[in-house]
Structures are given as structure tokens and as C-alpha cells.
Length: 70
Image (cartoon, rainbow, N blue to C red; front, side, top):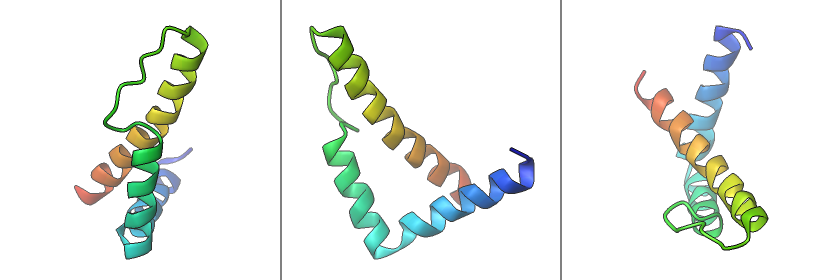
């Protein structure tokens, strides 16, 4: 993805999650997908699945944070 498209995408994330509705959706996603909770499981496949969910939330938060710095 070229730099301009990446910046546009980051801006779209920021705009989307800056709305009241977006904030509520992100809050819901964070609680459902383990942003601040352990994903430990004795079942390796389950733990990988849970960590994958968590990584999506962390990525969204990182993109929003990066776009807010500009």
C-alpha cells in the first residue's frame, strides 16, 4: 500500500472511532476481545485464537493513536 493510501486509511480509522458511536463500538470490541485481559489458556489453539482477537483491537488502537499524532 502506498504512503498516501495508508495515511488516508489511518485518517479513516481516526474519524470512524472519534464519533460517539465509534467510541461505543470500540469500547465494546475492547471488552469482548480481551484488550486488558489475559489470553492465557492451556489449550495452545484457543490461546492463539484469543490472542488473534486481541491483536486486532491493539492494531486499531495503534492506528488511531498514530493518526492523532499528526
